Length: 217
Figure 1 (spheres, rainbow, N blue to C red):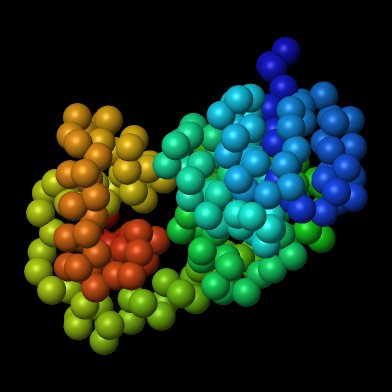
Figure 2 (cartoon, rainbow, N blue to C red):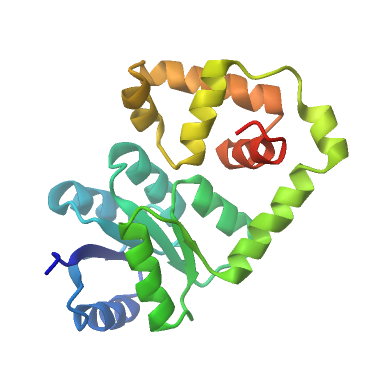
């Protein structure tokens, strides 16, 4: 029998955390190892307990979920984060995914879908509800229209830049990319800055979407 997936719940609503813990704990394949009421506490607990997966709310005191997800993605790249929130506006969705979350769920999600998302994330896969996927497709179409694409490609990407962009699309953090390519993390950041400039992209997610549309990766 496989070991249970070690999960941490991060939400500032105590009653919600307790209900979620109960829901997960009755499943033998899950183990809730910690709870936190804000992002700062979550980072500290991850460093101590090393859960495999974090269910992360977005709006919390002290440190919000986006900031915490970004910090966890950089410092603990093996820990997967699924956003679990009540907010599904475009800004929150894209902020959460850009920060490194591998899933985005709303709090009215069914237990079946929640369990599917946890298993998918633990296996290194992304999990998005259809409504969230639709937002990404809409943004994909917006930023990759022929008019935008023709205007935004300033100059071709180098071989190294394409290599790094492919690794970004695979979900690797700057640190992981540096280790894989045996280069300094600062060098990765410099390459990413050049990639964003050449593609006229605002962030990593937009750069990956544009590159896929153009057949670069």
